[in-house]
Length: 210
Image (cartoon, rainbow, N blue to C red; front, side, top):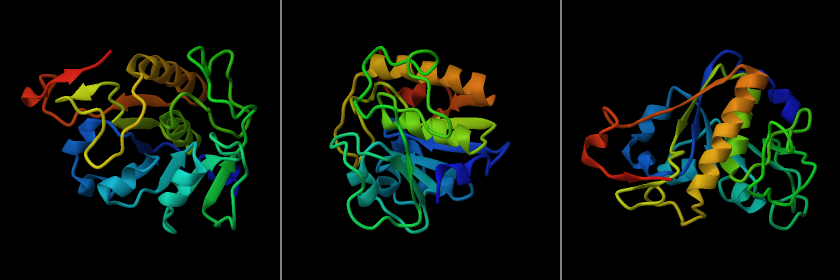
């Protein structure tokens, strides 16, 4: 299976893209049962449901979360080792090529200096960027982000059960906005985010962001 086999397979649909932010604590996994989902890294496993797709920049993560009922997308060469996939490649693992496997710096911009290759996906500062682009590539009319918080909620950086990770929230926030613009201009895809509370008062919870 190739990435091009996935192009526009969900044309005009709404796709839910999941990050690891603490707002995921307030979403019942049952919520995703009738939805098309792209899970970033290990989030579907942590929350105990089967995603339709996963995206990760890391081969070890893709191997960790491997599910025969999920289509897994990762880089052709691992972002850490720059090596090809080790061992047999399952049919439901798809690789995307990149012009470089060096992690992009703060100047990353998919609109100008870091335009994706044809039939490839962006390689941004977060695996979430690949998940967002994958959703647009699948044909999403609307992308709904969950857990792309870029901050802490009640002092938590990640959802419960998710291992600690990087937290350059200002960088991620800026890059998320650039990618939103890229997807709008190149796929006519609208990007929104789910607030799991009744309004922006957050039902008494405290959010601290950039």
